[in-house]
Image (cartoon, rainbow, N blue to C red):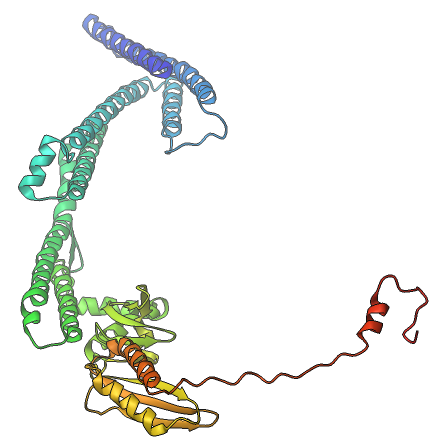
Length: 494
């Protein structure tokens, strides 16, 4: 508050001195005292203003440092960059230039600098007030709970987040417009005519040509509009295929995903080509640019390009499709999405594994459902050597035939795999869906155990490990030797 009060007083004093100088110039012109007297009055007014600003800035800077030291405990932390340092430098530079100009006799130039400094300061003040007023008005008007915000949300159908984004963009656009207008007003007294300024704006908007390419704000805006329209049409076709057409076809989920992804890529390429063509970049020029960038892409973006091409191969070859059960290294899961750079695989632990496409193309991948979804399961069974093998075989085949998820063709078989210290069998059967193999294998194990117990066949138990008896003699003599009460001179022969 103390600094603001001193700045307020400084503004009043400078305004009074400048006004007095203007009145004195008018009086000099009325009485006809001559040009030299008028220039001398201007120089005196500029010198007084420079000295007043210099002494005031010195006091303001000292008081500012004292208040900072009182208000902030060490270490002092600034949340945002301070604008006071550059502003002080600019004010001191203007003061030095005005003082130096009056000392060497350029009074008119010093007076002109003072007038322009006051004009620029006035423009900055108005710009600050307009910017703050606009930001506060937009922030309060476009809040979701305000009347205008509720009306926009209910009528247009925007979300709260979209309304906040629109408010920020609108505030930023108006701020830029105010800054441009303030810059034009500040440069006007320096001889920059309005025709030159509007000519520069017109050239920036309507563009200039570099060879056969037109670079302009209008062409960029039109190109963005064309890209948005073309991309919107492509997305509409993509959504129509995804929600309307493809679900009514006999195509599997992997092929439908490949078609949708390919349509999305083609739509993006066509939209980008249309937008670039509007700016004058035809396909032959794009080929030249691509050839120039090929070396950099080959060295710097080799991995990205490799993964992108591998992703296209996966989509076209369809060796791996969305929904497939794949095994990559030590992990396995279901393919959920094939992206431009990588493939998302959801593991059985509900974790999402991101695998680069190049690893799937060049590496070894097991696909459980590449040709069909039929899976094979094996149930090992071990019984004692005195068990009748035919009894075990009939029990295993009966369990397999009674399960409704075990296929009749190929028929289940029982393999007699080993005849050593125990008899080992394997029940091999097929299920229509490999995803259910774990559950069906568990059901068969329950049924096999129950049937074998009912038939009087006990599971094989491994014999206990052989034990070696250890006999220790003369433990009483060893105890006497190890006792702490033994004689110091005792020996092993005592």
